[in-house]
Length: 378
Image (tube, rainbow, N blue to C red):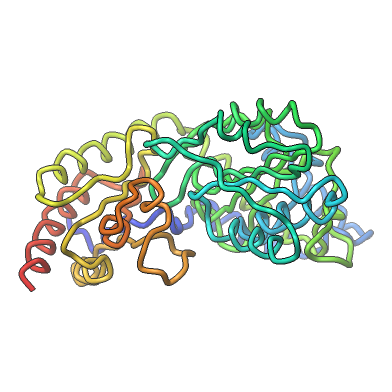
């Protein structure tokens, strides 16, 4: 078998599933009506959106009217964080988050901090797991929002979302938001104790440009985008019918064999770790509390960008930090986990999929060792 390219950057984005793309094309061609139009074409388009929304709601065990379609997780995160804090700022201006969030969490939180909100970072243990006792200590009467990711995008740390949500039930003025971007379609998650949740289709073989914000029905938001009728009052704009239907298709497919796919990816992850652990001065930052789809390594004595480009010459694609991170050479997440500057400035991320083959992993490991040896000689 000839392998033209080895793609190991699935956490940045996934290739579109062929049948999802076919659905997008079919809906684009066959359903031209605006779902908000009153004529027959609009009514049919609206029915298709409603059917897709019900499919998503059934998979996630939420109500259809709790789904807000957005352009992706970054917009969903911004809508949730800004929308909640601006709407309910009369209740308080205190926000709690972690050192393991995506930049689209820190962005809106930093903005809110600049206009008078107060932000605390909850402590985490040696595995990066939120310290629930410290969370309880930080919670105040004026805490309005806790935003904690379900899975860190760089290391793969899985946070105890259900337990955190249960604690917050004792704080009725506080809302709980979680970024589901790296867990949807990979591992089952219970959203019963969550108020708001974000995700993007392109992380589970859907099309770029569509995502969701789950918002419990009794919660209100200040929208980011005002004006114009849509599927909800919380996000204006003409409903993107082909993207919405393709999102539902991608999610349905992702959950069909989710447990089988998870176990397969875990086996690949274990294989890489077994071989990597034999290389001197290579540290595995991802631990046994991490999603197996993400494997973060620190390779001491090698610049991450140099390694990335060396592998790229072999048509092997990995990443340093996350695709949406700042240009800082130090990984905030790795530093927070290890408290080691050298490891934080020499980390790479390998991200896997059920599409990844054992042969690809064998080739990757061989080429990685060659590249490390070559770069360390320079």
